[in-house]
Amino acid sequence: MERNKRSQSEAPGRKHPRPPACPREVEPKLTPRARAIEALELRRPPGTVPTCELAFSLFEEWLGEPIRPFAVPEGTGIRKRRAMRRAYARDTAEVYRQMGHCIITNWMAEQDTIELTQAYREETGDEFMLGFPADGTFGIPDGSHMEEFVYLLADRPAEAREEARRRIDAALATAARLKAAGADVVWMGSDYAMNAAPFLSPPMFQEFVSPYLRRVIEGFRALGLYVIKHSDGDINPLMDEIVAARPHAIHSLDSIANMDIRRIKQRYGDRVALIGNVPHGPLQLDRRDVIQSSALYCLEHGGVRQGGYIFSTSNAVFGGDITGIRIEPYRFMLSVRDRYMAGLAAEAGRAPADGAEPTGGLE
Image (cartoon, rainbow, N blue to C red):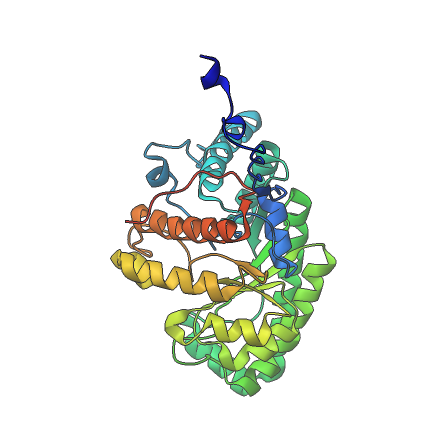
């Protein structure tokens, strides 16, 4: 019927047509890599807050089906080996894509990391930042070397300083090879603290770590790499020294070790990006109420509105005996992120730039 063809703005009795509804402003779309770089440069990227993990291994749990294996049988030819690496990269990149991650990091032997970095670049181009571990600075030694390390610092400080220089040179050589393979971000993984306090006192840290931390970060930057300094534990007494060394970001920010992201953002957020602070315990125990409240605290106070924040747990996401995290609570954590970002977009009258599918509803 003709009447049914009329638009509402042309309905009988209206003196003037109703103006069309204003479309929501759509933010520009950036690749995950570009969004991560924006955050590392202390800016606020459009769309969903950049997200990553120090390491992630629950690919099959996320997909609900097997992925192609990473391991290559001994004696496999070069072409077959390369094809297998690319198949693994293809499968796992899809998981990172679905989760909204921006940085893919490989913690493997150097040659494996080189080959996988090349495979990710071939499969995904510049879609993601690609990371690798390298540090060189003294961290907390394992139990079998604890006594030896302590005596080295106390009795032979000159030898300790020479060892620190050697380790830094090795880390920079590794970084140069990974940069040539296509990586663009280095994770410095030496832990400096336990939950109650740093392992080394601030004066000892200034003597045996700070000079080499500054040097290695300067070297990483000279290679064109972004630098993320990871450390577990309460590093509050060391934060001035770490930030002065100029990493692009600090990761972990262990909430169980008195690392309050709100306070850290207020004090250091104009100089360094922050990554992490969502605690592991509630994820391990599947405490949805605590996961939600802690994730919202990080999103609200870590810098989503101001910029310079990447959403992450405070460690790494593995299953089994390593961290005991199952995929369901992790998926729930990401859904908290999605709801929070949708709320910010609604406040601003914008459509999300990413167009990402939600990772799951709040239960």
